[in-house]
Length: 271
Image (cartoon, rainbow, N blue to C red; front, side):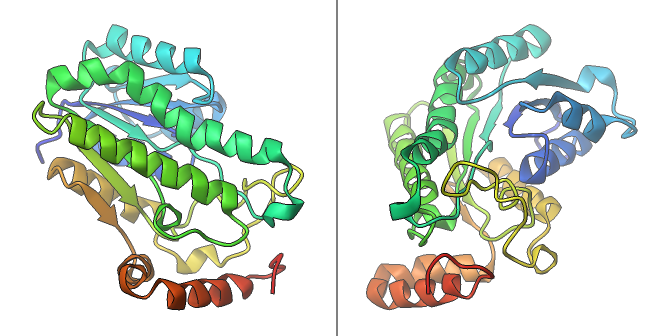
């Protein structure tokens, strides 16, 4: 196997997109995987027919914005498998609306899921990850490096997530903890369909051509490779890498490029 076999991995937001792909890829590599999401039926459908032994996985209904759900997720993992080797904080929400039009409840919801969900799960899992010399991974975004227009709340939550994880890495640099910040770039997933509009309703459809993006299964393979090799950061797609690199040296020019690129989306809220 590839060095991850028999390890215990928790994946939040495992009912669709990158989270579902990570769970399936982990199971295929011999990991014992705890799938966590609000939608239990979707997780059951994902696993059904895969031929995976029941003792290799655990499904947990959990809303990461709720502190007690995160505590219960860790407790149930320990009850089932006795250890935690990898925590992947993947659960997330996006948005698409101008800040001036957006309800504050939308931004609060994004922070609660994307940032506090990561904090809660990591808080309860950390003592057990320190015991195993394990991994805390956060599935972030290029928006955690460069704010994207009409995604103010999303960008804020990802900047916060990355700052939290970077500080956590430095605090524990002598304690064997591996911290990965993974930014998949534009990857085919459900996140744009469930993105919140200004009033908090779901967008319902993606403004982008999902068929031209990196498949979630490919992103999952890259992320697990980075976990295995204990890399500190991972930025996927050429567009994502260029955005982060160019922004270090030419931030004002990248502001212009990002504005023009995002303004070309169908029904863009700005021009």
